[in-house]
Length: 348
Image (cartoon, rainbow, N blue to C red):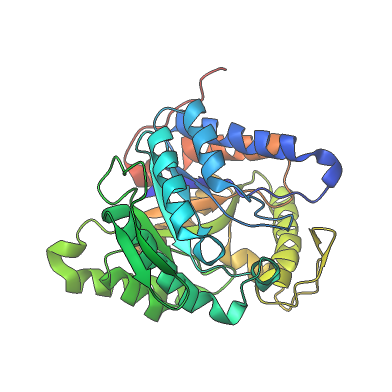
């Protein structure tokens, strides 16, 4: 089982500055590269102050210039808000600049607040995503592509430059519903998913859907992977653990507002709203605790067959504490699952 760091910028205080926020994310990416993490992942979100990354391909290129081996995943780019005739070329150029380390995670988008303010009705996102994905795949694999669909109509054209890798970078599908996971796997996509703050059974159902589809595919599904995203943090005392769980609970009070709630945003800042789930209930589903506790929590993931876990430590947390937590995770937790010896962070 491999591990990634989700560079999901949290921006609870505008006075901190966007430049400092993204410098913190870049520091995490460089640490990931030194410490043996498999990948870093970048969200795409607009107009809001959590998971804040309106230009993931730009940031992917920046990360590639400051790292040597770590993969760079989008988790995810929101296809319905892009024109695939433009976006396909941007993907190709980013893949060239990332020197083959880019992995393209795609999805339909989850926040009505941002998607509808960008001119796409939420009710249309699934249909738009399906057609956008088909157009993008065609543009990355074929020349002189024309289209006559519901959302795209255009005469033959060829995206330039052509991909350096056949079909462009590896593509991953973001999907949470177990039935959707099954069908996307059968279509040949790598899968990114998360139970969010849900219970363990939902996670089991998600993984089972993937493994069932993969087994049915036989040799054709051999190399497909399942990536799971989790809020996580290494702590060294019960007091610290409780404090981080409280921070995560407050983070989810903002996350839920735009994910499943009314989408109340004040000048770009998501308003925290009351949650039904208690801090104690939330703590059961997150990877927050001592290294030994995290190893125990990750054990079932490895047994289920999860290929990669994306760690999200950016939820109202101090940047240096995040780096310390990630280094501790790499040194004391990762070797139990990767089979590789711990690496030490080199001095800058």
